[in-house]
Length: 379
Ligand code: GDP
Ligand code: MN
Image (cartoon, rainbow, N blue to C red; front, top):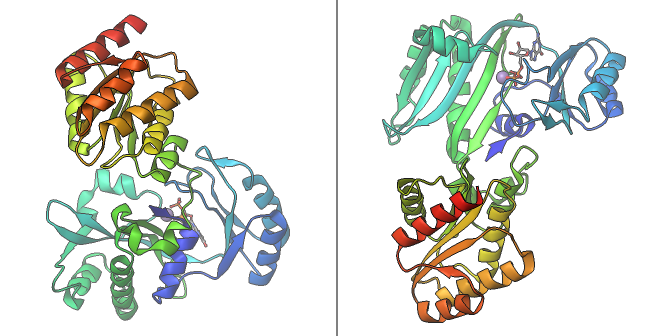
């Protein structure tokens, strides 16, 4: 789950990381009011969950409350990188001497968190990474030892932080790591961390991604989730506890268990077809969950056949069959279905499907073959 800039900055403030003064505005009048309070140059920042807002025109510097109002009315209700702008962060303008990149993320190969920094932060950081990767310095944080002062000092030397600012920089790194751990984040990024002309260090931007698997430990964050940048199917899937990923093919897949879902996709491929999605309905799937999953699959206009592959363990095949039957009666889709049910209560399950005149299959091979052939016929 990705946090907005303003949410990330709330986290920073909570951990004593300096941020510019400012507040959220959802109307041009509010933006004007905040600009009056801040008195001087202010920055309007669209709160949209995408990178490269600055380049896309989502960050504007203005010099008066009146101009703040005008620019805010242009941004609000418009789109930045195709995402509707509903709120602006209005902040005091800062005189920048240097933009630094500072971030922390999980390095899965090393099994460690990496502290990453560059003297060349700002909106061109991707370009820096591409053209001169040696300008990006990485330091591994041992999870048992934590982040050590000497590591930060080495980093400060490498990216040439002015000596008088070392103490502040070291504190910011420690506090950032503290926030990273407390939130179960997989990424915390400050780009840019700026050195101002009056020699202060301030986090001018903020990005935090929290590990979805740890969200149960952060119910307060879950309530703040912004779904405006998310595919509606994905939002819907999460609501029902389904893992759904849309793909490019035309065979919709409904499977229980991630491994079985992968295997089903492989076999479809092997038989010459292309899966339209990955969808794991999980263990003990209820009729309601099956119905939700089918609605999601069928809402994809690219789907021309649906393959259902259920291995009943905790999940009961008759329950799944009922879910399928009810949903099909309700939605009356015009795409064919191939269904394989094995395991707990499979006999009862098959009986329900046979009564509903649905195509069934004994093995996964057979099911995939039928689905691929049906998809070809439709195409
Ligand atoms: P991003 O494009 O989404 O990463 O948005 P940022 O918040 O990083 O802002 C993009 C760029 O706008 C920064 O790299 C700065 O160069 C510039 N910027 C943002 N705030 C200020 C400010 O207060 N003063 C000045 N002079 N530039 C700013
Ligand atoms: Mn940025």
